[in-house]
Length: 629
Image 1 (cartoon, rainbow, N blue to C red):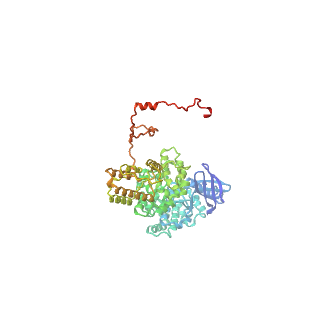
Image 2 (image 1 turned 180 degrees about the vertical axis):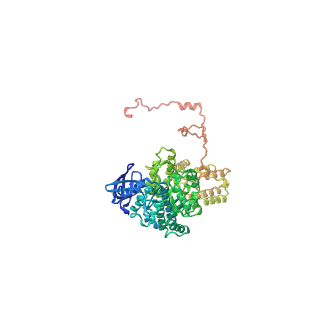
Image 3 (image 1 turned 120 degrees about the vertical axis):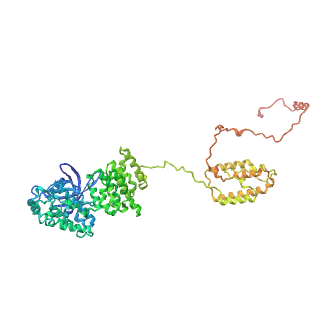
């Protein structure tokens, strides 16, 4: 069951924190629980320590150990010290919220020597800060005081016994001795106080911690040497012979190139611009020397930090390699990127999803600049549910540059998510494909060969034959043939040539002028028809005048097979004629005067006799009666 609390201190208050009831770890004074805060924008994971507000004991009269722990975390801030979030009291319980982390004891079995080396380096830096800057002693350095964050960084905790050097005395050490880790308690603590070597208390405890972690991990010369150094020097019975943390950090064990890179990234806010420029110019090449999984696990969070993303040199020299994915295992691909696909998906994608929630224009534009290189690493669900909503927010911003870059990114998402998902709303086909359809010639290659052979065998030149889509005119042949017309059989239809032409023209007008792809049967019939006509024309060649060849050319040209040149778009000559149609031009009478008739001349006498009136004797004077009407 989850508990919902309102948390905060005098400075701030956060609502809606949910704490898991099951504890991660139970200690003497508190239990550790996972928690998260869900608001309208982000989900923040935290770690909450819950303990009693008051504890019996001489040391905890004024405040309990957990309250003292939270107070010291709030005062002493360092990248290698567990980050304080807030604290509050409820009834008899005291709640301390810190950054999400797990105890070192739960993950130490999965760590390799290099990871242990980096972790010990972080703890040594935290102790160096407490000794040199805060003038304080931790007094309880051990495995239970170290936490590991999600990105693999080690953080120093267990601050309930911390005190200033001026407050550190034998009485204080005596009161806390029973509660501290027994193996890490220096047998010569009194000598440290007397000889004013108060820093040696933590040096001894750090030596014990390093030996416990490296006991089964020291498989190289450097690790073995450091193990002996911790055993003999850091735990020396003579407290004056123990080195300070400044000297410990200079040991070769901590001068590994990977540790140097990690250390620089952690302390990046403290570096000058010149140091940052020099560091980022060679960083990609240096990182390529290490295992990609190790780099992604330990450095990906630091490499994707705000200070790195906004650095001009890092944007040019590092991010093109960092925000790209190896598509293959070739040497060239490996030199241009840092992480293969599986490593990128596991370690970088979750961090990039979190960064997309950041409403910072410069950060967003840096991500979108390289988005095409790594967008295929996200699943469609992640793109649609997490990244797309953030991009849609970006196109509504007043920053024109951000809007422009965001629109280009949305265009890249269309092939993956589909236009309906990216732009939303209903779509319609508003544009058409205006490309011309590829036209096929009607005559196949075999048909052309057959036609060529047929014409050549009958003595007709091929260059006299042209192909056109005009209708066939049979009258052109009959006009030049002087042979007498064959008698029509009895009972035959009286069909004129004009009617035949009109019927043919009417059928042709119904054809689609763009439908030039006819069936194979029609092509074969056309081929036989043309061949037969050519044979009949060749047999009558002796009776044809010189115009016959032209009429044969006209005959074939009027066929239904178009020439490809006539399908081309030609310039249209502008006509000067009026566009008005004369509907009466075909109504003018045509008078043929082929036959002339001679009228014989009539004499004058005959004309008079013709016009003379002759009276009939049978005429009735009564006229017509009414019944005649």
